[in-house]
Length: 474
Length: 131
Image 1 (cartoon, rainbow over the protein chains, first blue to last red):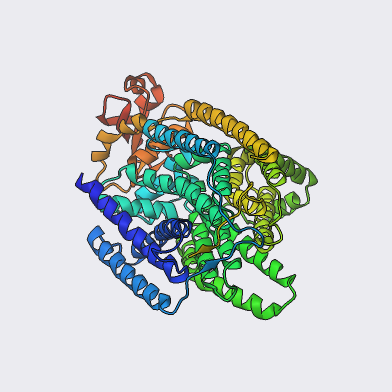
Image 2: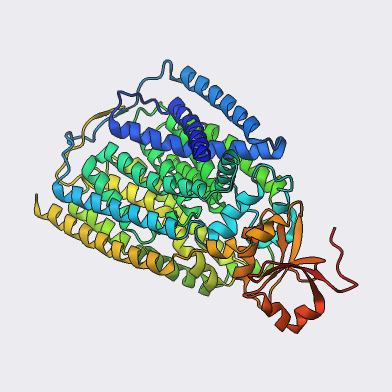
């Protein structure tokens, strides 16, 4: 029992760190609209997990302290972030979310939508609990990669570096980033035991945190009806809850990608001079890179998409581009610096990006491209239970009068997903593994990572069916 | 409620029901609990205190059982190499060790957990010295 209380306390420390970090750049208060506050809290928890994970890794490579010393370290960092957020907040004006022209009032939820939402949540929560009672150690990737890495970097193991240096362990991909392993190892350190509760708790947050962020994020802009529909689409998409429950790192990555898109939307539709959301988007994109190797691709896709979008705008082009990239960099660079250090100084080289004659041959093999395109198409349309079709129907039936108003977010978000898909396809082109095997064993999870962001973007494009969203004050 | 909204709700319901069916089918068919397998190694783990790495030997090429053994014994590094000085023997049953000539000939049993998990020492006088 004491172990569980200590674990809960460690989660509280992590949450408060993330909460104050988010609040420094996203000024909401107890008086803000509930959707604003929920968005802030969820981003705070996700941010806290990222910060705690980074702190644990930094302590591992420097002092390798015991839990008590590490707790002191975390509390000092919490105090610093708290002080920073108070200093930033003084003088900051609350963010305002103006409603799109012509749409004013948020309608209530019809009984049908309430039933749909409750049933979806019940089935997903029940399924999550079932999976984790039946298989508390998670799926293959959980025990062969993420939780295995956590076992090596747990406090007290002075030979932690063998994970990255012993060639007999290269099958477990020690080049993979450490957000989940470090957070799990941190929890185990506080508990004094390797309990499955820690990875299960992390999996629960990233799965249902994505659901909550989807609801609050969409509802902020389009009202509760679109929020509920977006949540139902997300839960009903094949394997979303399963992948989360299996303790893979795909759910955390999906959460951070969704967070970036939500923060982009917040930036576009609050005062343009308020760059706090862009700083946070940079931070959360950094966390994506700290979660999985694909996260680095999403960082590149995010920055490239933003540059491409800004280049095609007309007014004050270079000044605005520079200001935005500076803001994104302010949030991204501290996290990215740790990721780069990990990749360069700790982790062994990955199996990809080895330029040789074979790679060049693959790059010019048209058949590979055709196979990959076919499989991507199949996975996006069939693997997701036909999600693109239902999203198209959603926009068609609900109407799209507000597309023009949300154009900026739609374009940037769409470009991020487009560039990410292109990047992933290229990775499959040059993969050193047998192509069909690699597609079969990984493509569904890669598509899954992008699903929440896609649903959010499309939900912005669709009118709230018969609804007029409130003018929301933060 | 207008017609388009009604149609949207109907399509959403169909999508949700289809998703729920597929979800339930998946979790009931593919959720596999590996914790009983991992628990087999609880006793031998206490005998590996202070050991940094150890070899591994099993009578087949099943990589999954090797990966699970590594998970069970981490942070001890389990090297998938039967020629190490000391190895973890992983059998379905302990008596399989005695039935397999290769193992009888090449290893002494240091410890037998009774459940197929053993600590073995290689007999080979030119056995590999690990650093």
